Every structure is written in structure tokens, then in C-alpha cells.
Image 1 (spheres, rainbow, N blue to C red):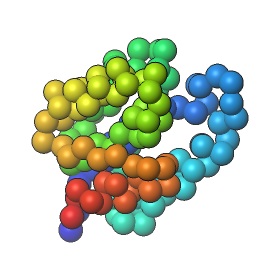
Image 2 (image 1 turned 120 degrees about the horizontal axis):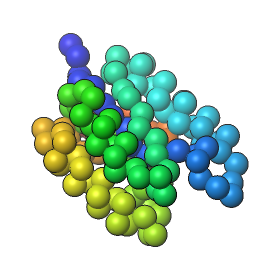
Image 3 (image 1 turned 180 degrees about the horizontal axis):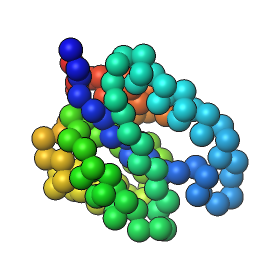
Image 4 (image 1 turned 180 degrees about the vertical axis):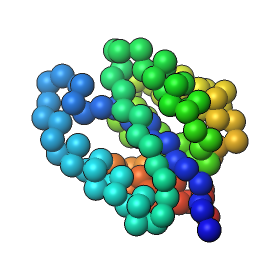
Length: 119
């Protein structure tokens, strides 16, 4: 039984100036590997807020048919990015209207967030 394909949208830690991306990159890799543990195909769309993220997100949403889209906490929780978060939610509604929208609490529980909607 296939649970459907997932798109994970988040901030690219390598493109955020002023901090060490390696711990977040490692957490993203661990979280992404958990999709495979559940037999779920998952794609990453990691963006930088100042590099036209909407275009990259729309392109990713149109690449596949997604059963679920997980929007990461970097976009969702950082108050200065509230406008971007709203645009991301509306892009998902427009480009993947049948996909469930889920939210993770950390990069490592992203598969759990998707599984809440895929079962």
C-alpha cells in the first residue's frame, strides 16, 4: 500500500546568513531518511526567503502529485516570515488543492507530521 508522495517546504540552512547550517542540515537528513523507513516518497523544497521562494515553491508543487505538503517551522514560526508563511499556504492551496497540509515541530519529526494525514 502506498501512502502517497510528500513535499517538504522549508528554509535552506545553507542559504541563511549568520549561522552554522550543519546541525540543521544533519537534522533535515535524519528526518528525511525517516520517510524511507515508512516507504514514503518525499521531496524537499528548501528556499531562502530573499531569493524569490514563491517561484521555487510553485515549481516544486507542480512537479508531482502530492498527497501531503509539510511546511517547516523555519517558515512558520519566525514572526518576520509571517507573510511568507501565508503565501506558502496559499501556494499549496492553489497548486496542490487535494494535498493535506501538515506542520512539523522539528526537521526530525517531519515524517510524523505527514503520517498524521496519510493514514
